[in-house]
View: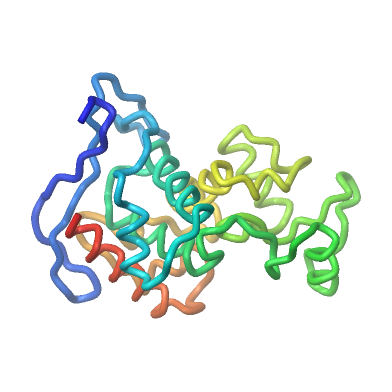
Length: 234
C-alpha cells in the first residue's frame, strides 16, 4: 500500500443499538493532512478500500450496479473531507443513502426528467417554480435535498452553485458532499451525526432525526447495524 491508502484500525469495543461491535476508525496514511471544517486534521480525499462496495452489497443483500459502486466511492471520498473518521457515522451515512435513493442521486419520485419531477410535486408546498430562478426545488440527490433555502445552505457550505443549477445535486460527487456535510453539520433538521453517534456509542434509531424525524427509523437503523458489522470484519 502507498501512503494514500486508507487503513482501518481496530480501536476497541463499542455499543451499537445495545449490541457490542468492534469499533474501527478510518485513518489516512498521509504525509500531509488537510484541516477539515471541524478543525481537525483529515486525510485528503482518496478512493475507498477496494472491497468497500462488496461489503455494503453483502450487508444489504443486494447486487450493486456500476453506478452504485461509483456512488459509494463518492460518499466515502466526501466523508474523508467532511467527516471525522468515525466509521459508525460513515455506516449511518451509507444507510441513509441506501434508504433514500438506493445509492443513486435521483430526482424526487424517481422521475426521469425535470418535467416529470415538476408534475409529480406540483401540488406540494415547494412544488411551484421559483419567481427568481424559475427552478422547482424538489428533492434531488442521495438525501433528497428540498426547498430553495436548503439548496442555498448547501451552496454556502460547499461553494457549488446549487441555487441557480439545482440539477448539480444529481452529480455523484456533489450529491455526496450534500449528504455528508449536511449530516455532519446538521443542515437538514438542526440535528447532526455527533448528536447520536459519538464517543464509541451509536443511537442509530434516534439518528433518523438528522434527516426526517422518526420516519422509517428502525428500518434504517437495521441497515446501519448490518453495514457496521460487515465493515468491522473488513
